[in-house]
Length: 550
Image (cartoon, rainbow, N blue to C red; front, side, top):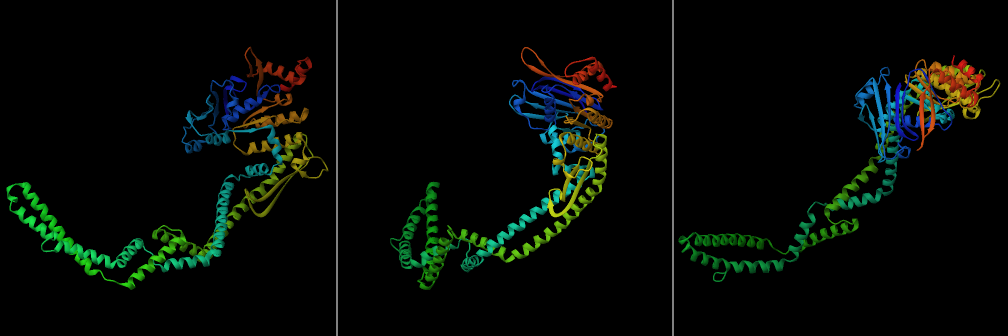
């Protein structure tokens, strides 16, 4: 439960500190005094989005801190999962810096806002004035029934399987579209693939063919120039080899005189050896050269085929053509094997569908079982709240469609008066009736859950007199098992609280501030008298206030 709350530099609040007790706590104050500011600060503490404009003094940071007694609520696993230090009295802190950045801490460890939101869901339920209208919303109606039915784990499993089911359906549709597209292009793709495969393309093939073509296309020039080069090496009198051999012979005679002369000799000798090898290789190359018009034609045809394919497929080289061939193979394969792939995914979809139907049936059975119990409990509480003839009907219908929370359609109907006909909840109830129904629902949920704290922001809208007193009694009973905090304008409810805070504005020389004070017994009498007498503390109002407190 919330044991302490500190708010600094937030909206109209400069610095307030509250110590809260278990049981039923009341907060009162005039309209505009700042009750919504307290709730806004609590919302920030529980992970709401930070608003820099809410900082009172933009040159200082805003700090909101809450202490929570959590020893009885089995939250050790949450702290372990989030890698946080578990403390029986845990402290949550939220800071908004002058720079506009927001920071969050749990037991002085920095955390993401998502961690605050998760922890907050285990600690506090804040019922806003607008939430009462959600009674007519199907999503909220499902949440209530599923909470009471204990469907949380089953719903998590269902939603996980539903995501997988929809992913399979999407893949099936995608593959079917691919198949249709591939089928339209199949014949042309097969033609292109055959054309490429018949070319027997290999990496480096184009370079080899172009080199061979140049050889076959220039036989005469190659023969003529190779012969000339060999002759220049081999001529007995002026050939390069003979000249070098004569130079080597001269150097051999002086090589012993110094290492320099010996080096000259060795270097010339190396050149002669290299030229000998070169002459041998050129002679071999010359021997291999012969005119071959048939091979020339064949090489030319292969090259022209490659050039045509490159132009056709807008490819720069054979390697790109090979990649295009592989791509076409896959396209053709998709078409030829798509039927098998579709059948396989269809089998997976059917299996997942059966699993979903099984889980949805479990959800339906648990809902169907708890609805009569919930209706009976709600009608009983509504009778205590001055609606003895109110009848609630909850219609649960199974559908073939997989919806976000099962295969059920759920709708609440209300007959508020004796002999009245059932109408949709949002159309059948007045504002005061909706408030009473919401309180009935919340009290049942509170008994079902292990939630430490629930805060009601004017749950008493639209009611007064004896009905307000009865609402106060229900809130008081709820406070016996959990911490209940109610913001109210009604003295009949305020008188039922075990502790009472007054929220008020105070003007000083510089600005207006929202402040809060815990009222003693005499102060409570005066506050209730003011609420009863319209800001006047008459003797009758004071007597009535004492009666309410007693």
